[in-house]
Image (cartoon, rainbow, N blue to C red):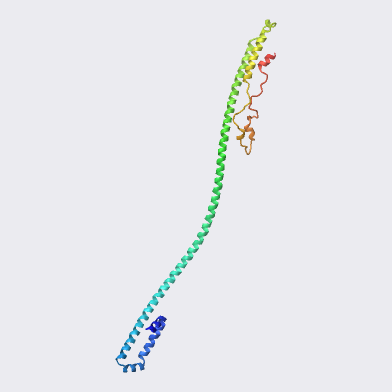
Length: 259
C-alpha cells in the first residue's frame, strides 16, 4: 500500500501506466495457465488484485474529475485576475489623474489665499483711511461752523456800522454851525464830543481777523491734483482775499472832525 500511495502521489500518468501493466499481467497466457492451477488461495489474491485495480480506476477517475474542476476554476480565476488587473490599471490611471487635479486645486487654493490676504490688507488700510477721513471731516465741519459764526458776526457788525454812519450823516445834515458861537466855540466842542463818541462806537464795531479754535491744518490732506492744500486751510475765499475784515478808510466822523 505504501508503494501504491507513492505512485498515486506521482500523478495521473503513473496511475494509468500501472493500470495497463496490471491488465497485461492478468490477461497474458502464462498468467491464465497459472490461474488454472491455483487453488482457492490464488482466487483470493486475484480478487484482491481486481479490487485494487477497480479502486485505482475509481480514484483515477475522481482525480481526473477533480483536475478538470481545478483547471476550470483556474481558468475562471485567471479571467477574474485579468479583470481585476484591468480595473487596477484603470483605477491607477484615475488616481494619477486625480493627483494632477488635486495639485492644480492646491495651487489655486494657495493663490486664492494669497489674494484674499492682500484684499484683507487693502480692506484694513481702507478702514483706517475712512476712519481718519471721518475724523478730518468732523474737524473741518467744526471749522466751517466757526467761520460761519464769525462771518455772521462780521455781517452784523457791518450792518451796525452802516447804521452808525447813516445816523452820523443825518446829524451833520440837520445841524449847522451857529455864527453866534464863533467866539466861544461851544458848538464846535459839542460836535467834537459827538464825533469822539461815534469814533468809539465805530472802533467797537471794527472786525477782527478770524482765529478759529479748531486745528484745521493738521487735518488737511494734500490732494493729488488741483488746488494746493494750504488754500483750503487758510482764511482765503474763492477770490483769494483774506477772511479778515478789509481795512476801513477814513470814517465820516474823522472826516468831519478834520474839517
